[in-house]
Image (cartoon, rainbow, N blue to C red):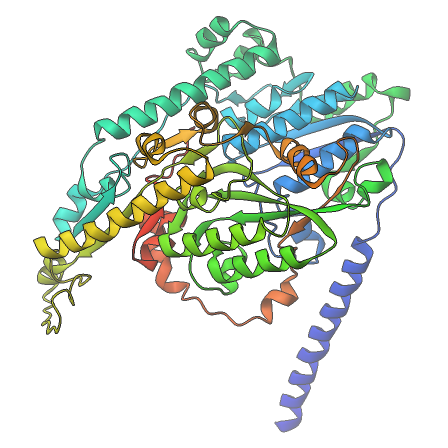
Length: 573
């Protein structure tokens, strides 16, 4: 029996050792740049997620092929394609893209640059959504299969309200906030939109809808009035999409490749896939340079502490401030772009990061680049006084503070659970889940919230070089889109990564025409690095909160305390 067990253990160890060797061999092989034929056609397949921060790398072909490229990966990829004389065409194949309208704008502008460089850009769509179609309008030609549907029908915003359900369970949620638009708690305390919420969402919908109409209008060479009339008829069967001029022809994928081959030099179609072309060094095609700048990615909700959980879901103050210090101390870096994609989170963690950001800008030239969202705590951390660049559709602002508390007394009664509470100190039970807030306790909370809100507005006023009285009316927890924020002075310029780099080069004294190498932080980590780290987060305890309140808000709600958190998760579809 002992020999048998030893044999099993030895076998498992040998198999494990073999897998590790194979994995490292694959990693070594995958680092080799591929041969790029002339001519080549770059194929860019985009799925649901387009993250800012790279996921954990699993060095196996199946996992590598399905790993979503980051927005910085796509940015570098399309810039290389623009300059690479061997790349004659780019095929974009988005399917179910779920990125925000800021990232979509970045990719659309990059594809437009590739077209202007004389490359053929083709879009092939399968059951396309409005987001997929938005990207496709940057192409010379748009194709889709004959038996398909173009789900282009305008935009909508939806909010969910839980008050009646919570009443049935005997659950009371008490929320205090500074700013009349800071309506995150409304989903627990109201049964419908407040006038302020309706005002903001209608403003966002109007702006995004106009941008969608204008983009389709330019891409399909139609007037805005024509596009508005067409959108009112959607969604469209494939034949209807062609008849309305939204799609050029109905082809299956193999037919699309055959059609494309006729348009290419020598009628050759050498396919080059995204993951392979990513391994081609940027400098080999004239992109990149000797001087280096950092692209420091801040993605997710903001929380205190540090840990493995921060690698893929959050901006943990402990980890992120350490990264800011590391980048600040690196003498090889000429400047830093901090790329923010966050709706906020913990008030105190946001303040800790704000302090570290302000220390960084004393060491290095700094520019802020806002992605899909940089609101509340995500906006707060950007208040260094440095240039802020955002997309027209970036969700930003939301300058406000809130505090939430759950009272489960009614639920405990329904379940036959009783609590007895003993206290020492007037406000010892201020955060108890068994008692409502008393009037003195509520006043105590209001004092802290108002003080925190005042400090937030003061930080913004100083960074934006304005008076408190100028900023406060623009605050109140209101969410603004990037183009609105520029008009009222909350950001400096509209644009993406290219504009942020231009501004940083100017601040760092680097000639405008000189190319630079962009180093992304935090760097990608492998599954082996991740597995050897100790897990410090209670994942199981958070799943219920995620299911109820969503990925972002669940973590911040579990953390408790004062929050600089965007009032709602806005996903305009």
